[in-house]
Length: 194
Image (tube, rainbow, N blue to C red; front, top):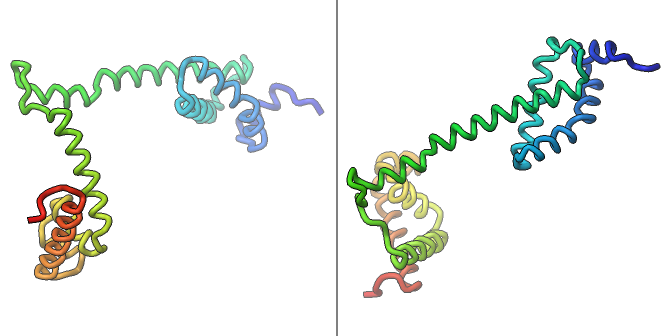
């Protein structure tokens, strides 16, 4: 039995799962190719196609059937693409990195504090990597105490609550963690052994 356009519209308006799946199967790939052809990345194209179908589902009751479903879907894609481009343009205008960059300078355009030179920056990155490696060798509870207190800068009382230990025990854990870190860093050539 042939399906008329009106039958298809009625099944869509009733949200018939098989009909909806058939429409999605028939149009998802062309919509995706259309979004890619508009210059969107694979991720953005996937999101746009999903947005198209969500909007389609929400507007089915207004779809009068004067155009083909494909035409309706591509019209939605066109509007969603324009919205996405407006959103991206607005994000670009309000990029927080600009504010962060500008905050590095005073009102005369001079550095508030000079950035590290390349040699110091490289040494800093190497030291950070060495600390991470050494920290992996510190036993669990000592490492947790060290990270919570020194890295996360939590108060001693908070660290004690988290680790369920006394202030004295936490002091011992921190002392042992620092000693292990110092020893490990010295073995890697950071700091003096004296």
